[in-house]
Amino acid sequence: MALVGDVTGRDVVLVDDIVDTAGTLTKAAHIIMENGASSVRAICTHPLFSNNAMDRIEKSPILEMVVTDTIPLKKESKKVKVLSTASLFAEVIKRVESHESISSLFKFGE
Image (cartoon, rainbow, N blue to C red):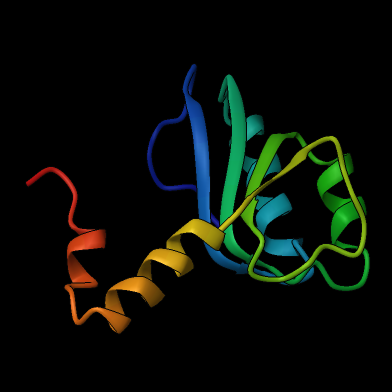
């Protein structure tokens, strides 16, 4: 694993779609901090968190991990913040039922 770019003095956010064992994610966080970052946070859509993933996150330099509730967590952590997808799914279902646009939900800055 190698770092590309300068993170010195920066607040870094790691983005991933699925975190399984958190091995790669926490290794990246350590490398980022070793290269002078001020802080590191992470976000992911699907927190599988298998094996000892939660322990790895707890022991890592990651200050905060933001995840969605698409997969229920087996264990809680002060570092992990869960965001609900319920309102998004409810809106999608409503729009499908009323034959409205779903893609407009995902267009930003237009």
